[in-house]
Amino acid sequence: MSLYFGGDYNPEQWPEDVWHEDVALMRRAGVNLVSVGVFAWSRLEPEEGRYDFGWLDRVLDLLDEGGVKVALATPTASPPPWFSLAYPDALPVRADGTRLLHGSRDTYCGSAPAYREACRRIAGELGRRYAGHPALALWHVHNEYGTACHCDHAAAAFRGWLRKEYGDLDALNDAWVTDFWSQRYSDWEQVFPPRATQYLANPGQLLDFRRFWSDELLAAYTEQRDVLRAATPDVPVTTNFVFGGWVPVDHARWAREVDLVAIDDYPSDAGPAAEEQVAFAGDLARHWAGGDKWLLMESAPNLIYTPGRMHAKEPGRMLRHSLAHVARGSRGAMFFQWRAPRGGAERFHSALVPHAGPDSRTFREAVELGSALRALSEVEDGAIEAPAAIAWDAASWWALQGPGLPWEGIDYLAEARAAHRALWTAGITTDFVSLSRPLAPYRLLVLPAHYLMSDAAADAVAAYVDAGGHLVATYLSGIADERGRVRLGGYPGALRDVLGVRVEEFRPAAHGWDEAVTLNGAAWERPGVTRHRYGAGTAWYVSTPLDDEAYRELMAEAAGITPAPPRLELVRRRGDGMSWLFALNHTDRTALGPANGVDLLSGASVSGVLELPAGGCAVIREVDIVPGKPLP
Ligand code: GLA
Image (cartoon, rainbow, N blue to C red; front, side, top):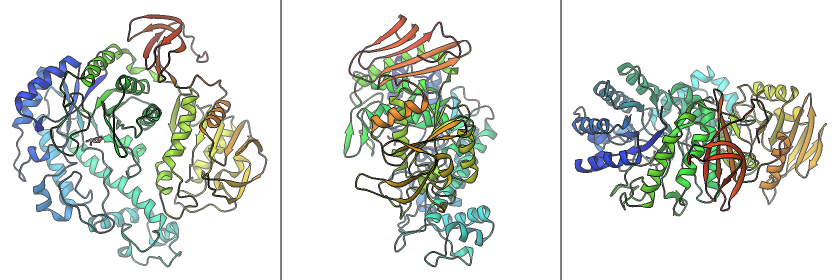
């Protein structure tokens, strides 16, 4: 099976003669999969109940003749203008009461019955029409679920969700601590989505609203999935996960409902941090996929949106970033988008075929990437070896976005990234993990700002260390229970015993964060870091932010390894009697790394030392690997 290469393809934006050129160029670049129809609802159903599939028939036939498979989308992320006029109650409402209108995309309320029904209908039409089409390889439901709404439909659905969650109002009042500021509810009808209010909103309500939306949107997804499965039981179904602080989606939970985890990855930084963010996203996707394969469904071929202006991706990065994803288990590299549009809000977003056309650096790099991916098909089943894991908890992220925290600057994602960066720069391949999953396989477990912690999760962490595990926990971990209620008796509530410390007071400071730490079995190891023997294991507590170098050193010490040279990325995948070493040089100098085997990209043999030019990549099919031998 080849790795996938391609991207979002929007033939509805172009006359038919361009389609022929598209397929010819796709063949030239080695494109073998495209996502079609993602935003094509107004073309597929120009009026309610009147469908026009003729053009899509021709596109799919053409792609099939060209040997290009299709991830066929349901277009439900952008209802057409007729839909807004027919069902104004299905338009989304912001917390401040503003009802939004079409003119952009994602103008719907995921709880509105009319919207849900229209989605099921168009999905059913597509399922029936394209069942058995030879180009159809994958269903791509919707696009980047994550839009919330505060309207009356959402309010009714939220109440329904809360009733199921809590059973009775007393339990809800208790979870949300509604006796604070006289918020006690005496009737379900008094409960609303967190709409605009006078001052700080209730953090329990905000947290549950996120959880509710995750489940509500998941129900919207599974409805479409089931309609498609009924039409084509053998075609896998997915949706592309988007990652961001505004997204009320618990991807770990959603991953159980998709046949293939697919992510969109747009690093928010154009500098060296981009590589770290790519590695972070790939490791997270593998976690959501339960350690299995997944797919990079979208990434930017060139210009990326960064705050203020766009930045060009430097030459070579398209290949290096794609390989970094494949190294972490992606089944290929897909891009947004195939051809740059002439108009529309994203007219300057990069594309494999840019405005300049195929005579361009981007297209030449695409051709190079296509050929690299073809050379790598054998790695597809290799499993990734990771000695360390970071606990990832979407709910802690949401809770740390709530009001009234002791430090407004706390940013869960930044904390998780800093931990991952410290491991990444130390050369330690890292999994993400949920505390409800087995922890024993890891030599090192890291809890960055794991704010919410159930008793069961705290017990699992303690048992892990007791049995010999190494734990690094940072400030603001274990502070609250799973509902967000603060644990009493001293911080970090759920982790005091295992860490051997007790914190009576936070000391938020100009540089960010500090605490009054009392040792309770632990000892100071360096400023801001304590170390505690617990059972057969060791637990470090980081009570103040560390700089990158100190964090990297701590991770290497806790993992018991000598750090690798920074920014020479080495990731090993191991298959049946085979292994492959991905080596990516993210520096601007030649780098040397230990390797033995054949570079699948260049065909060159490597014995002992791999020499990689600045920005260079190699994927070594290894020889002489002794199972169980420590990694070089
Ligand atoms: C997302 C969307 C695409 C496009 C890109 C732009 O990932 O799925 O439709 O808007 O962002 O980066």
